[in-house]
Structure formats: structure tokens, C-alpha cells
Image (cartoon, rainbow, N blue to C red; front, side, top):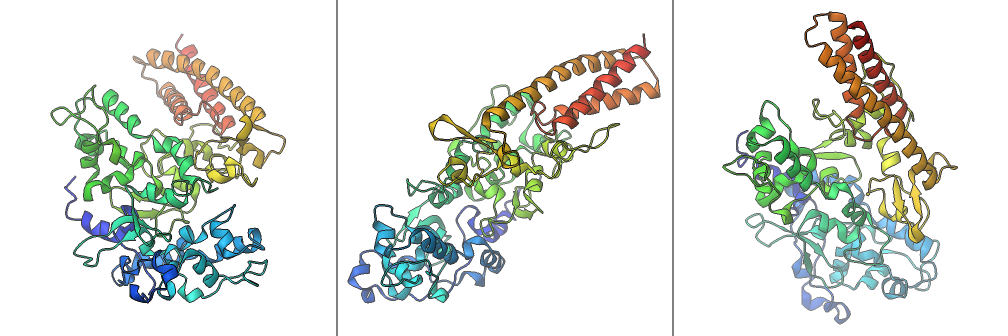
Length: 500
């Protein structure tokens, strides 16, 4: 692949929040000189610290996506919560009371810059209606034209001489009127979608992600490079005859490191080589900059509510129809037809040879099981928003929530574990038999030129490999996987008996 130094600056300019160094969008706001700010708010707000540039002049595409996305419509969410959970409370009690919740800090930090600068409490009173100074069930939005939502300057500290100098990844603090520098996009997301800033929050998506396999992918690649790619260069791994684009699925945002690089360059940067080649001693490198499968791998930051994946080869976001198609890019063959990670394909119940298509749980998507979110307020399942990707979520007191309950009210975590254990035992026992049978059949067929038997062997090998390809040990689409392995074993035995 050619060095991408020519096109990456262009891509980065268009992608704005990917590395947090570019602007996306900003509504026009009026900023008063610091001398006009009232004493009550002067210690809290520094309007001069926030850019006055109109971002959509250069970043219209991202502005349009933002304006249609969830980050561009946050005022109604706050009004709804105030009118449901904060009835009878004053703005002061909401922001600083015993059960404080700083709505402004995450839903619209730059709201404190309105009217020449004000405190968070003043902003809450300004942008939401009260009765006698208290929120009621009738509380609604106010001064909506001035409400900034989560705007460009919420996440981007833009220098006065931009675009000569580039913006930095940072969170605008509505408490201090200053920017808090961020080291990575996921750290930025985790300020409000996790407890990095507010320890008592019930928004714990970031925390859940940190416990998942998506947040620990570098070691997997290092192991594969040292075991299966010894003697190959990064270029050969990514673009060779037996190519495997590790970066694309294990950490697509890695190409944004150090101002931008190609997938080949990223592989060389994040993994050690000897003489430019991977060896049995290859290990991880520059781990502090490795992004894993980070927030911006699956969420376009300018339109985070719509499923899309970041393509590390092109530097663009690729929209998909639904969450399952998003999963299927890397956990299926939707993006790389030759991959051996085929959970998505197996779950769809197609792809086998000589057996009927079948779905164990028709109508159920990947995220129904792996991103289930309980509606029980205060539960970890509710607060994690599915971002552990485990069907089990540990709750307080040693109990667990399980996604199976969503469709099967009589199945709790214990029953689910029992069922899964049974499925695995059934599959692994049959799989072991089929492996032995298929191996014997392949050995017996080495000197045999029989088209019928050759086709049977191909069917057996394909179905066995397909059934094993998602490494779930028989839990994904269990009935279909059992049918695949039974067919593989049966065809192999037919060959063995035919050659006796």
C-alpha cells in the first residue's frame, strides 16, 4: 500500500472528533467581554477561552450530521428528567444538593456562556421553566434558541489562529469555564458516559467497555503475529497473498495515532519486529496509545446514535442498516469474505452445505443477547447499556442479570448457565467425534480419485470448519451448529465405509 501521508490530513480534517483535534459544528453564540460578567459568575466563566468561529463554514457535512444526531438535541432530555425526578427541587438543589446531578455539565456545558456568562445554577433556571423557583411536572424547555446542546466547543479547544493551529481534544468545564485536556476519545466519552468525572453517575457505558474484550485487543494481535506471521512484514500481513487486516477490526482508530498513518504503519508502530519482520518474540509496543475497539470504532462522534463503523483503510465512517450488521463487519464475513470469524453468519443460519437453513432463535439479533439492558433502575445492567457484551451482568449481592430473561421470563441467570453448559457439552462431544472422522476420511482420500467422495469430503470439511468458526462452543444458533457437525461426521463416516 502507498504511504497515506497525502490523504490522511484531508481525512482527519473531515472527521473532526475522531482524535478530538478538529471542529465539527457550532451554533452562533454571543460572548460578552469578561468585564461585563456579573460578579456571581465571573469566577466561574471565562468566555474568552471558547472559540467564536463558525464551524459549519468548513465542516458542513459533520455539522449536518451533528444537528440531526443525539448530541445536537439534549435540552428535551434534561427537561424530561427535571419534570419527572426533580419535582419540588430548586436549581440550586439539583446542582449542589444532597442528591446532586449536574445536568448542565454534560448536556450543555457551554450554556453557562449565555447572557454574558452565568453559573450552572443560573443556566438551569434560564433554560428550564419553574414555578415559584421549583421544578414541577410541567417543567419544560426555555430560551431554546440559545441552548447550545453538546456543541463543537464542548469537546474541542480551538486556538484563536485555527486553522493554522489545530484544536485539541478537551472537555469544556461548565464549573470552571476552562478546558480539561483529554488523552483519548474514549477518555472524553467517559467523562459523561462513565464515571470519570462524576463518581455517582448512573451512566456507566465507559466503565462497562473497560471490562470488555473490546478494551483489551492488543495482546490478541501480538499473539497471532508471533504464532502465525513469523517472518512476514507488516505489509505482507495486511496486503499479502494471505492477508489479514488486524488493525481494521482490533483497533481501527489506531491509524489516527501521531497525526495519521496507514494500517501497515500502525502494525509496525504498535508491535515489535526484528529486521522489519515479525518473530516468535513479537510483542506489544506503544501500549499507552493503542485505542483498542474504542468508542469511535463503532460510533461516528457526530452522529453517535446511528450504527456505523470507522474504516481504517479509507478513513471514512461506513453506515450500516442495523446493529447486527455492525457486529457482522468483524464477527462475520460482511467486510472480509475470507475471515474465519463467522458468528454473524452462523447466527443467520445460512452458509452450510447440504443442510437446511435454520435459526434457533429467529428474529433475535446480536445485540438482543449481547447488549441487553435491564429496565430495573439502579441495576448494573441498566447502567452499563450493554457495553460489556456479555449476556450475564454481575449485580450487587452476587446476583446476575441475564439477557435471556428478556424473552423467557422463567429463565434466570442460573438456568441460563445450565442451558449454555448443556449446549456446550453436546456440541464439544459431537465436535470431537466429527474431527476424528473427518481427519480419517481426509487421510483415506489422499490417493482416491472419486468425484462423489471428494464432494462429500469437501462438504464435511466445510460444515465442520463453519460450525467451529465462531468459537462459541455451540451456543450461537445451537440447533444449526449441531446439524452442521452431524452432517460433517455422517459424510466422513460414509467415505470411510465406502473405502473399506
